[in-house]
Image (cartoon, rainbow, N blue to C red; front, side, top):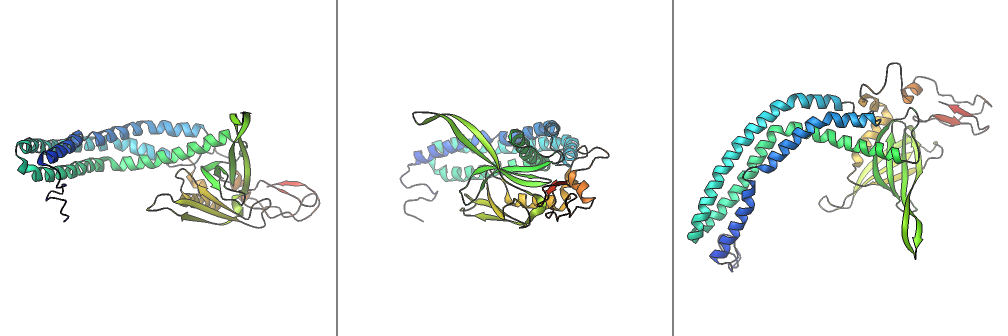
Length: 361
């Protein structure tokens, strides 16, 4: 042990009074946790989230989001279970609060004695360390009583947050989805292109994947100082989901999990027209590249349709992809008889390279 430290871990330059004042200050900070107010607030917040979840789901449905088909069921399950879980958590909170208060009384008595008798300072320091651990354990015991609902709510609310980002950006976008096309996900991203790293929004629907570049452009300057701007949005590239050959997620850089660049590289079929061979996207704002890989696979395979909520499609209606799978895709032009380009899942039409005839799929 360093010569500069005494047996209690304090600097040898500290006087007993200095040590007491330091420990008294530590206690003043810890004493705020005696009522377990932090975990009590968390319990109240979960109750609020339970009561508001159905409204949040209804709101995102009204904006046209059709996936997350299990949200309604999860909301009902949590709502019916919550009264029992809440009562159990409140009982645990009362019990743990009493235990912590008893320990806090012991600390205060020792603190008062140590003010008069500094030979108790080591005991006081150990008691404070023990008390802090005890409070943390008490908070965790209470959390365990309602963590099931807390975790499930957190997952659903996070998914709704991403869905809200999607519908709001589609609303402001310079382009519109096709009549039978449904948005799946969107996130802020940078396109790692040869011309730089333009920033924008990456979209995935049940038919396409595309990237909209978003740029702030100066529209008015006074003495070289920008006084007015406008947002310019344009489609940088797009491709039908069936043209995706492969994709891979990669995490680059970072130290101890900080500063990691989440990248997603997508390779497209070379027979697809007006589609880049490869794009690499760098995700921003905590977007998850592995989650996107999974979503792309769900869309390509058609499994994404299983995650639609029951009210998304009326009886007798079909999505475009379902209708396309049920009929033969033409290979020759109905006008000139020429060979049509290769069709990929997610395409709505083909254009004959010989006569320009557009063939609907």
